[in-house]
Image (tube, rainbow, N blue to C red; front, top):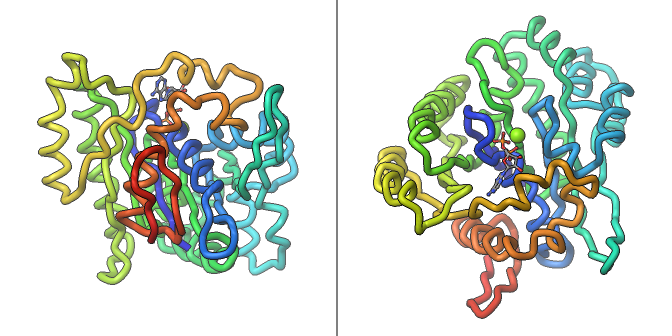
Length: 305
Ligand SMILES: Nc1ncnc2c1ncn2[C@@H]1O[C@H](COP(=O)(O)OP(=O)(O)O)[C@@H](O)[C@H]1O
Ligand SMILES: [Mg+2]
């Protein structure tokens, strides 16, 4: 199992969008003899990706029935027995108006604010880290890839569960936009990652920043030309790379959250952009493996791990 956090301490840069697209993409991919098993942990209690994958009503029900991440961590903390299935919520099959899209297995974990804050009040950072580690061990054999959709505005000493999630990740992707304000805010994110590394510094499980993912980008614009050198410098300084142009600024995407069908049928509804998603997934699978057997490409070489 590999855990990939999608992290930027600034809001609105595309963390949830990238989590949705990548998790959906990898859920359709195969490892040796079966499809990859994907888990999305939405650590943002606003629940953008959880709501997109499960629907608003289902997420509200999960919260009211105490089926959230904080709830399972509380059970672990109390040493109580629990059934894991109460906390892993499966994306349902869907039939669209035009075609049936076979969806891969994808489960979602929902986060809830009040109980998380209470847990964080009662436990210190090391205790929170231990709880998340125990949970990670429990799910280790059940999933191939875990995507953590991080919240924004994480504060050291305060948001201990999010920091523990970050510390337990193998890889980090940092979405950003090519604007001055967003690029200036990147320092905050790199500092946060450095802080998370320090929570438990063990040389053999250091979190690796796999790349900065440029979102809402058009290479032809002045903005892109103005900032792309800075972005590449920043990536080099932090020993990482830039995944150039994840998605252009797409009007259909900015209104996606208002659509009732949400992201359930990503591939059909955003087919124009899915090639970009595939391209970045290929780069990721090439660099990290992720157990992917083969990604079919359009007119490009297939990728095998
Ligand atoms: N490439 C894009 N083009 C247009 N809108 C986008 C794009 N990427 C994300 N968005 C929109 O921007 C808003 C913020 O994106 P989101 O993924 O929720 O960011 P974050 O999780 O970092 O806060 C959402 O309404 C989303 O639909
Ligand atoms: Mg988000």
